[in-house]
Amino acid sequence: MNLTRPFSRLFNTFSETPQTQLISRNSVSSDAIKELHAHLIRTHQYTDPSSMSDVVRSYALSPASLCIAHLAFDEIERSSLLIWNFMIRGLSRIDRPIDAINMFDKMRGQGLAGDSLTLIFVLKAGARFSDIVCGNKGHIHALKLGFDSYLYVCNALIHARTEI
Image (cartoon, rainbow, N blue to C red; front, side, top):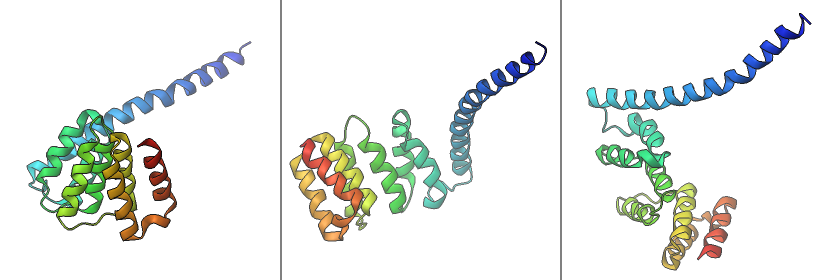
């Protein structure tokens, strides 16, 4: 009887610890991103794309903080393709996927063609928006850049065509 108590206490403690650590790790992560963003603003590095990429990514992945991601994105002088992808991905997941398509058009207007991930996010937004013109635009862009043979792009094209 004395042996079962330490083991049961050990297993109960072990089963509760990962959940507690998970909650505090997520909270610390969010706080750490806010702290990093504040530091970049204080040190005038908020216009540097390499410094701001983690901040924009973290904000863009959360629909609740997507407006903050957009504000941070607008402050960056010359956004990299990675940061554009973060924003297009975040915008394609919310209730207004037309914003992702507009962001893609804005990106192309600045001379960036995009990559396979960009096309996947745009096709996903087009499927959610149920816009045949956007679907055709994404398909033509995939053909022009040679991404039509990429498996994930093909799957996104099929998904977009079935949703429209």
